[in-house]
Image (cartoon, rainbow, N blue to C red):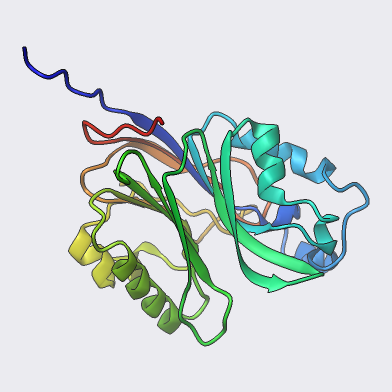
Length: 258
């Protein structure tokens, strides 16, 4: 009797730079709301509730500019809070720049599926503090999800992408999500994308600034074995970045359940 094939899985992906939950609707808000980067709000979680609702109905969500729990968040780990309120049973936050007790900058993932393995690394650059978190899912790490937030300098971004390329060299099926701080043309010039053939949605749309987007700097990219079905920015102008959502189909045989 022939062996039954494992059905293909579709995944709803999202990447979101949440800017520590600070609402930004115009350039002037960077000045008016600047205190929020070091001081806590009067109500520690009320400002997070709109984000909770927006995050639902996805399978894997990459978050940047969160906080691991510090003075500015009244010791609340933002990823933990969002996971519990949005109904994600699995989550992880990588604290990549520790300015405790004032701030503990972090990024990470919310997941419907158990994470098989977690690897976190510092990224090279002239200013320390950039990092990458690599999550592997399924038996033997069949799917690799990379979450990162790259530097503002193009020179540093090239070094950081090369470092990520080395870290996932042996992984066949890779999803890269995050605020990469660069447009698609710059990404296409890098060997990571030329050699691995990373794909993005064919109709890429800008996500920054959220109130009048004109820059494509938030990305979800996949290796060729993963099929892109639909995707684009989400109309949720809360942070200074719009979330990016994408639905993909995984190759046959990949199972992400425990």
